Length: 146
Image (cartoon, rainbow, N blue to C red; front, side, top):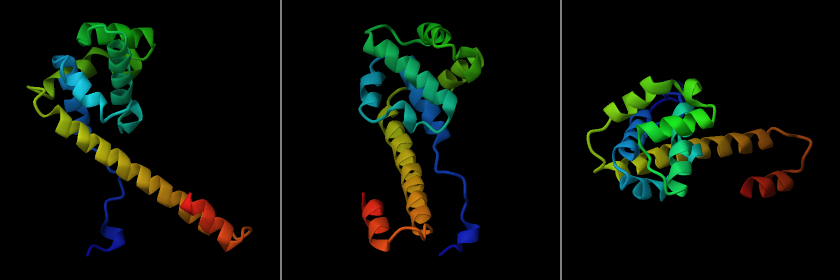
């Protein structure tokens, strides 16, 4: 078993899977319904990926096409296009995937890492509760269980 000091302390993430999911959505409109059953924008680790996904979702919910042109326009409307890295980011997302065939597996991987990050956050909050000596232990345990 690895010593805790040897453990990589970066939050769990699947940046390549995030890019592949977004590339698949931009490449194949049929991939979007397969992806959205798993992912919400907050599941993405990379902020720019979350913003691109928000734009894709917004277009999809309006029954509009979701391609590089329409997503670019939507990101500009959201005033996020330059902040996310502009056209180079969108081009790199398309380059990250050749097919949408594995988009569900990639989405599941992104979700798994998001759940791991949430677990870490929740556990950290519980640890902080444990250090609060102004509260009774029973109160702390009740709050931690919730």
